Image (cartoon, rainbow, N blue to C red):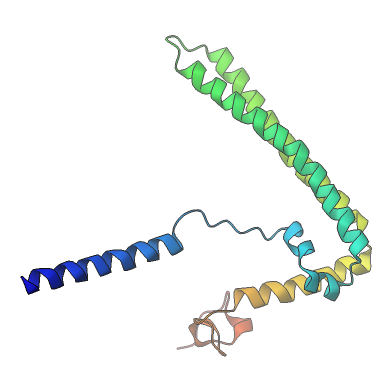
Length: 172
């Protein structure tokens, strides 16, 4: 009886540990490291020398693009539903399917175009000096983010200096 109880307790503990680990590392882990994330960080803004007014202007540009893209994404979803309906019919009309696919691809192209236009507008609000300073700050910030954690000690990953980690084979 005691042995069965002990085995049951161990099994419950093991299942709970594995489920917590799965919960911690599972699912969609999308990180947004775009310009909006950067402009929300006051430390990066201060180091890059970008004023709060310019940051607000850039945020407004991206919000306007996001408004447009939300409507386009919704229309694309509706067209995908129409495509599914077309495929579920008894006789599938090839011309109708191709027309719906063309609409979906046009909407996706328009979304990409809106994003590109917003990025161009945002970049054009900054001066050349601010852009260069922002690039320097971002490179330092990205390098720090890449090389943090327990696997990256003073010698970095694979026991090599941090600057030589990528694209260099270890000396044996």
